[in-house]
Amino acid sequence: MSNPSLEARAAKAEARLRQIRNSGDQQQVLEAARECANLYAAMGDPGKESEFRYELGKCQILTGAYAAALESAETILDLPKVQSDPVFKAQVLILCAAALRNQSHHERAVATAREALAVMEEVEDRYDARAEAYQGIIACLVEAENIDEAWDVHNRLSTTLRHVDDTKLAGQGFWTLGNLAFAKGHLAEGFEYHGRAADRLQKINDIHLWARFNNASADVQLQAGVANQQTDDCIARAQLAYDIIGGTAVELLGLAGTRARWYFANGRLEEASNLLEKALADAYNGGAPEDASVHRLWSQVLDALGRHEESNRERANADRIERSTES
Image: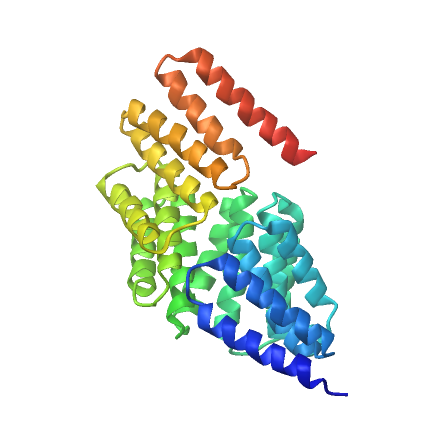
């Protein structure tokens, strides 16, 4: 039985979601997607509920709400659309894998990503969904430190991307391949893949994605031992993008950490320390959760400056945060 009141509210919620989808404010998009999902659930429309709960889960990943994203994905897997649409099932499984990976449940994340690939083996064509599945398994294997196994997949993703017309998806695919190449120590290929990613991502109207890509690109370069002008340019582009759109407290702390690692690698220790001190204060005042990795980085910087008592304090802070997240 139809409910005109709920239908009107759902139509209004959908219109609002379309309006803010590319705003860069992922928290607003998240809340709008949740409202749509809940309204369609109340209307007894599991197909529409599935679609908006999937969008909700993707936003939860972007805002760092990984446990909530896993809950959203598991809810979708119990809905009928998953059984009738194998491509959608694979996408939801990749969402599950991303949520697990970001909570360091690496064995489960890899197994879930493998399940998504197995589902896609039954689907012909659909290069876009296959590219997402390859990206998902590569990300999970890299996080699980199975770099060689991830590298075995890279040709399959690269070949698939030749058939992908979606500029954003192709950009994200080359981003993944670049990250993998840097992790493997193939620096020239890493820069080449990230160059292809940049060519595509800068063509779409998503400044938030552009900011995240440039920060992430600088981060993997630093992990690979590269801290040159090209790395600095990535950080500057990310900073400019966040200056335009704003950024969450978590994102800005992450960017400050990347900049501080660049300072550290280039011997600019005082600048690194001052930046981290201010960034941590701003982030925590802005509601960001405590971040062990940034405290540990500051500890290393302070140690290099000979400020060992302060370094021990920050190391203890990092240990405390890690214990609290494990409990």
